[in-house]
Structure formats: structure tokens, C-alpha cells
Amino acid sequence: MFESIKQAVSLVKELEAKERIQSYVLTGAGISKGSGIPTFRGEDGLWDTYDFEEVATLEGWMRNPEKIWLMYQEGIHQIFDAKPNAAHKALVELEKNGYCHYIITQNVDSLHQKAGSENVIEVHGNIARIKCIICGKFQQLKETPKIVPPMCSCGGMMRPDVTLFNEPLPEDEITKSFEIANKANLVLIVGTSAEVYPAARLPSISKKNGAKIIVFNFEQTEHVNIADSFIEGKSEKTLPIFIEMLLNR
Image (cartoon, rainbow, N blue to C red):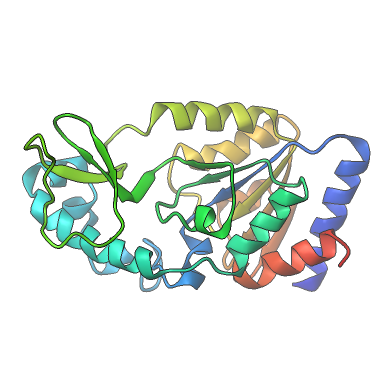
């Protein structure tokens, strides 16, 4: 692990000596696992407990919104209780020192913001934010809804402001993410399965434009095929070491 981290640090230093760093970090569920939030795929993933066709698709929402709300009620409770882990905090340090200009996250848990990261783009929404299906009004939750589904003052049903399967992603966030990917010369990929598109395409776009790719994950994914450096292990352990070495502490 230490050798791969040293290699990644050298890669960044060599790039920095040649040109101004333009970077983003793409994060997925794996970075939040250390905060007690389960991933969707893999061992003990949410899809082992719930049928995603019923609770995570637009069709499932239309059929039975109450059932979806019961799952989200549990998810929101976990997220309210969760705290940023060492990986989230390491990315804050990366941002403060000019090595991370944007975090593009597939997560909906707000942990990057809680840790102190400022330029966070949520391409799949935010589970603690809800919106009315009639008037479009947004509301930020501060506690788990006691009655589900919650209702808007206009009489419409509120739904979690997250992107369901078979539903378009937020246009502004996706457009900005692709613009960032096209300009970047350094990409860090942390804890993502590389299976959810279009976000999974972003590093490939950057790679085609000559960007250096560093992958932090506890297992190999498709992103390893384009990586200049792969650091295997839990991100809450590997990222802090990477930051310490990069900043010569």
C-alpha cells in the first residue's frame, strides 16, 4: 500500500512541476462506508435487503410511494447520525491546499459538506432534501419524518430529492461535471463501483484529454483499467496517508 501511495504522490508532484493542477475527485458509496452508511452493491449492500426495482426506480415510486418512503426513512435516519470519516476530512485538506477544485459525488449523504468541503456537486441529489411532486417546493430535513409520506403545504406529496433509476439526472450538475472533466489534468476516484453512468464516464473523458488518474478503492473496478496509479484499501486509511505524503508532513 505504501509503495502505491508513494507512486501516486510522485505522479502528482511531477504533474505539478509541469503545469497548474486542475483537478476533481469523483466519489461513490465506498467513501461513506467508514461512516456507517452501507453501500448499495457488494457484501451487506442495500440491494441485499431491498429490491431496487421496488424502492429505487421511478416505476416503483409511481406504484407505491409509501414503500419507498419507508426505506428512505431508514436511510435518512442513518445519514443524520453519520459523521464524516478520515477520508472526507482528507479531501478537505486536499481542497485547502489546491489539489482538489471540485468534488463530484454520487453520494446523497452530505458528508462532504459536513466535513467542510466547499465545491461539492451532487449528481444524484441529496436524501435529506425533499421536494413536492406538484409545486416543486424544496425542504431540507433536520430530522427523520415522523409521518410518511410527508405532505407539502400545497397538498402535494413530498418525495426525496434523489435521482431514481430510469429518471433523468439533474441537468445543471451533469453539465457542469462534464465541463470539469474535460478541463481536468488530475482525477482522484474514491470508493466508486464504476457501474453507475453517466458519472462513471467522467474519468474516461478526462483520460482522453491527457489527465492523470489515481484510484482509491478496496477492490479493483473498471476504472483501474485507465488508472495511472491504483491504491488498494479502505479510503479512510489510504487517503490520509496520501495527503500527509503529498504535503510533506
